[in-house]
Length: 450
Image (cartoon, rainbow, N blue to C red; front, side, top):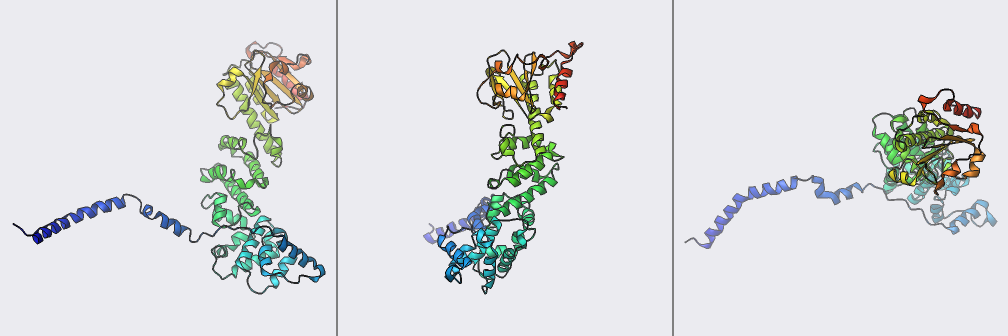
């Protein structure tokens, strides 16, 4: 019978024989997932080592502002110099750094300014950014100070390596190319990565430059087009000053290759907080190129006409009205279909067409076409075209965008002159009088031509 020591040796040998199989199993488990997943927290920590902390503007200080005013005006000669805490604070005040006297005073200080003051200068300069600002004394002074900064500071170390991209003559353009477009970065994320203020004139200028670069490639199979639509146009930074955004929208609408993205662009514009439907929210479109506004309205009018005849009437158009009115879409200032309650339920899912509700008649739908000084009303059932002068129409319908139900009777003014109540005829039954010629003639007298 074997003793205890012999049994232990056999067990150990058996264990050794199984060790390769055990190690193989463990190695397969470890290599079956990406190696990075085992070190996620370490990876995040390493990635954030060079990430500069977000800038925090100091709270408003009336004490330091009063000191500056007393220094500037020399009131009773009380303040001859500014203390360091005051300087650190005043560098964050864009109105103060814009004054030549402040830059002159900073230049008189020997040595490099503290990091807190330099960050304030950059933040202030970015907040009031213009194309001419890099040529100012304060901008050049700030750039020189950052270049000579030799203390430990993650933010200033990062800025120091790319100072031309932050304060140089072509800084916004460089930032757009090297940061925004290089990785198709969200402007907010890019601002965070570089510890600069997202809601600043500099970031808006850089984002406009990025948008214009995307416009140059519009029509190509490029990820930049999707970036322009889904990231740049949706950026919250436009809210403070939407002029750059409106300039981009105008250029987009008028672009010679816009047909490739007109449908998604239309949806984005109609649902955008800064724009919406120009026929209803015209004040929001102030600042957009007028030709672009009219072209966008023509897109919407065409959509309304196609919806009315193809969807509501399901192609029943013996009178040729669809083709006739599509000739005039570029002359329309507004248009809107009105559907009966029953008809509207069929199209509750439609989001691109802003239709109203119609009640009090036999027609399943009506259609208002606004040409500025002339307003035309059509109905789904064959009948007459009612052509109003603007003042006549607005007395009856003060707001064609009302959410209340439109009464069919109000759209039919039987007191109109007979020449402006034109009866349709099917095209195959026209003999002498063609409703299209009559309508064309009346519109032409008002300067409205295809």
